[in-house]
Length: 311
Length: 311
Image (cartoon, rainbow over all chains, first blue to last red; front, side):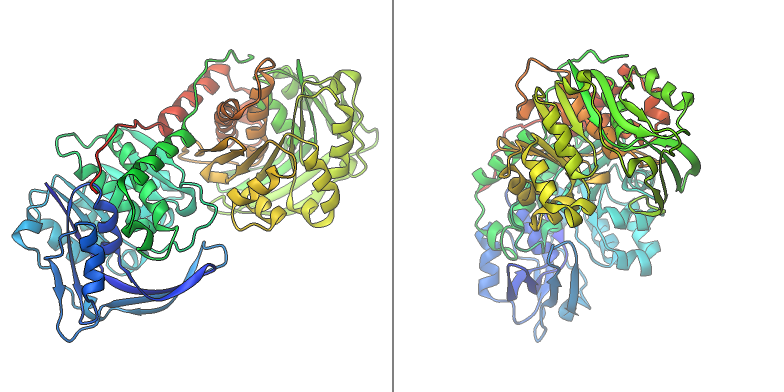
């Protein structure tokens, strides 16, 4: 089986209270791939320019990620994003977004990528998400990310894309904006009525919630003394979450399985933010992922000792 | 055994997107008492004016709360708070705070109130909290709430009060302000170094976290399609949380017990916000509390099926 991801491959420049990097590997498809690489064979589809070289491929190959469908655009430059995080890391200011080769990106999937069992459509133009989704006819589970920009300027296409996937992963504010509902729960239930069977509401430092027809599940973020760089946390989460589904080809993708997937996504995202960019996840070991999932279970479990309450 | 609470008894006027009330029973000690009344005999200590009558006492007596130490100040008026909540209920604007009889409040505890097994110091002047704490020598578990005002203008007294209690219950922002730490986890650990053995970090719609020397625990808020009125949610939570401790006089107050207490606090707070003021909790039934705790357990539990991850 295999998992295909389509999205941005980037260089990021970031400054946080803990330091800065002038040029580090990033992009949604990269963070997703690294996170998902613990679970299945990953094929990453996205464009890069002449500045994307051996060092960057080495990070992906170091985690066994198949890069055959990374499209090198001769004479082009790789997508570049630059931003500064606030002191408490809860907000960030974008200083530059140079789309470069990403501006004219048209995903070209090899037969192998098209034959994927599971597909993740990272945050790109909804029409491209639709095109990719239509090519991957055999995918038994498709998840999608998006952003406020597409809600604002490509609403019809986004609605159509959402109707074609199994799972939508957005943050609380995006869900509320998308649906006009006052909270993430009602927003997620609205999205479920459009076709998907699962919605993940990301809540930043507070964790994430899963809403399906079967129920509601919530998991806090792993508690951290210090978040060094939040860049890519959401995509790392999606990598662990969707990757976990891909690792269970013979199981029905039901609520219980997605709850477990949430734990793996949360665990991997927590490592992502401990260092800049891909630095921590690139050298993450399987036992570290498992240990953090076990920790998360301990940190959220309480006994249900029956208690006679006073009437 | 018994649980004593000292704090405000009030009339509130609130407007939320779901409606308004011009005068409803409120105050930290009232919301706490109602929440805690499912667990132990509650004695409430606080001042009221001539406008506090049979209807208000009836709400408290309806839940078996002992009101002997409610101090009636002849010729006085009960504490009055008025506020308007934002559309998304995440913020509120205070329109009026008339301290009235609360301005000169000096807690007078009967022997029975002083003999309490468990004590909750609701948000009042820290010097009064210290005085009450010193009177309740036998209390085996004492918890305290506070607010930004006291951090700003009565810092030394607040520090001393905190050093005298077992548990501090504050929201994330208050913990960060109190300690100068960038996040609730490091802030809570700092507070633990001052004497308390437990800190609860309240996170509003995202739930609450518990930090002790033994570990970290987090619980989401119960998912609600509609929050009608958040007034008193934090005090209802504290009532369920501290009440649960009071209901277990023969058990050590360890991390595991406080995790279970978090579930009861969360359950009761979730009912509080379903209607205005005390309306919902005043007619809450024990089976409804138990049912919601069981729901919370389902909504946070995931299996830990071992999985071989890819190196």
